[in-house]
Image (cartoon, rainbow, N blue to C red; front, side):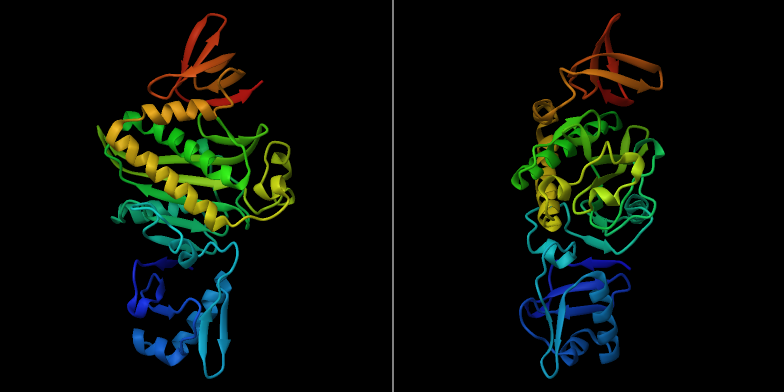
Length: 334
């Protein structure tokens, strides 16, 4: 069931609303009576009680005391609109947030909203995805505990430059992991690795017409507080989670806010000055360049030394018969 955040609320409180616009009013740190909530939003006391129960099921820690009312208790590691909004330091990204308990795919959900005109920066995140997907229509395991979200972009760039946004988000994610003590690296084009094991994947899907970009949905999946045991057996040797790396859970809201801030900064940089700085930062964070690689692409399989990315963000591989430019494909580090 979706919950949305809105920028402001009366009395300085925070609003957390359902998509049907029947809202709840909760004070962070102080009690407010059910009667007052009902009055402020023109709903019945019964409706207030039902909505409180729904919010609790979603993960909000709401204390109820007789003759005092309800109080929102701050909780650790909550992927909840209120907790995100209070920390978010962005201008565009995440200004509208929709949290889903469970969804087939945040990409598919947000794409429908994009087609209806949702603004740039709209964020959809889910506690779990039942049919999460990665590149080339592959499935993406998305159990509870991970960080699964999609972000709506409406960039003013030609379609031929869209793939650079994947590199942009990779750079932002690596920077956002550092405060947690995680030294991650980037495998071209869309993977974030730690010790050659996959921690995060990035998926960009776009709606384009001729030379115009309608919208882009950036999907990011991070193995955060899900453990090794939560992953499918077939990927356990190639994947890793933050929880397993650190031996403890992290505050996913803090990580999310870091990613949104860092990616927005780079996004604005690209819109003003192009992608040259971002490409340089990607090179600095790469675990691909300077490595022997095998590339599976539509043109077949080739192997060689990954020497650089060009000014368009494509991978350059030196093979026995010369330098090859890789536009798309799967890269395996040898």
